[in-house]
Structure formats: C-alpha cells, structure tokens
Length: 313
Image (cartoon, rainbow, N blue to C red):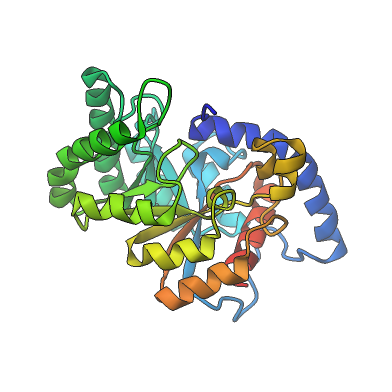
C-alpha cells in the first residue's frame, strides 16, 4: 500500500469524515457534546496532565497565521503543531504565538514521505537530512521541543533492513544540531511497512542510542496492528508525544483499510480508558495532537471535545 503525505491525509480525511461531522453536530445538539465554541472545559474534567494541540493544516478558518491560531484557541486547543520546511514567515508565526498565547509544542517534517532518509539515492537522503535540519531550526525558533519524523518507507525498491540502517545513519547526522539547539526527534508509527510493533519500535530507538530520539506514538495508527495500551507499556518513557485519531476495524473489514479512519474520535475501536490507564502507569504527561479531518472553528471545537473526553476517559 502506498502512503499519502500528512497534508494529503488530512485533506482526504476531511472529505471522508464529512458525514461523521454531521452526525457529531447532531449529537452535540442532542447534548452529547455540549460545550460552546470558545468555552473552557468544565472545572476538574482532566484526570491527567495532557495538553491538546492541532495540526496547522487542519485549521480552515482564517487567511493569516494569526487568524488560524485564534480559531484553534477558540476551539479549545492549547497549541498548534507546525510544518517545516514551509513557505510561512517565521516572524509571522512567532507574532501569532505571542498574540494568542498559544504554544507551538512541535514541528512536523513536511518532506519525510518524499525525500526519505531510506532512499537508495544518497542525493535524496541528503535532501531529507537538509529538510530535517531546517525543521529542527524552525522548531527551536518556535519554542518547540520535537520534530516529528517518518524515518523511511519500505517499498518495492527498499527493504525493511535497508530502511532500518539507512534511516538510523541519517538521523545520527543531525544529532549534533539537536544537541546544540536542545531539540528532539520523535519517530512516528505510520503505515510505511516499518516499525509496526512496539518491540521493534523500542529496539530501533534504543539502537540509535541518544536521548535526543524518541517516539511520537500515534494511537489510531496502531489499532490495526496491536492494542495501543499494550504498546504504551512497552515503549514507556521513549514516548515523547501522542497523535490522536480513531480507527474502526469494522469499517476496515467492510469498506477497506483506509475507510477505517472514517470515524470520529471515540467512535472506533481504540480502547481509550485502557490508553489512559497505560499513560497513568507510565506517569506520562505532555502534548497530544489531533490528526483527523479538520475544518472551521465549529468543527475544531467538536474535535477538541472528543479528544479531551478520549484522553481523560
């Protein structure tokens, strides 16, 4: 299976979730999701210290960075995760951060599906390393702590073993910059034919042998392959941040693997109470980012509420 890049995934997910969003709106009117746009969650709602971020590409409202940050804040998010390299002006992003009080907890490497660190061509890998360095520098400027990275892709021309060794070698090249800027690289579990189980995920991180490299655990991406809560137990303190989406095994079986993502957070097969219990065993706190079909402020409000309920269940 070929994998879309992150922005294409968010774009296609928006269309796939249109009917689900309509259902969510109906449920909200019926009282399941009662918070109004911009209202704070009820006092004492949180059981564990997890802050909510939204991917910048999910925000539909606003023509400027400031307006998009304002939309995310009104929806109930506390941070925005940016992309890099990008065509955004760094100073404009910083001004929006300061004006809204929103945080930028992390940056997503925007070219890791294209200029992969596992490509057979050393020139492609070099472009990937250069892009990763740009993302690290942008993240540092934004006050972020991590750069999310997909380390490579297994395909017809690249074996699993080649992805393993090549990507580790390329990641090691940027570790001095991470040390200099006090930044970390967070490897995400995605559908790239690589690192699909927690034990191999842990071994991959441990072999790199640096506290600058950890894991960006995507809960929804894991449901197809293993129980997310058990994966959290195995990965333990290697987990730096969380991506939050949902997955339905029923829809996968009936409509195809990608259709499994076409459900709202909390309506699929992720056992969120078990995930919460695993995080509690780890005494984990930090940032979790929504990665679903986005939209306007009203749509983002539904996402933020569902995300809060899932993470605090």
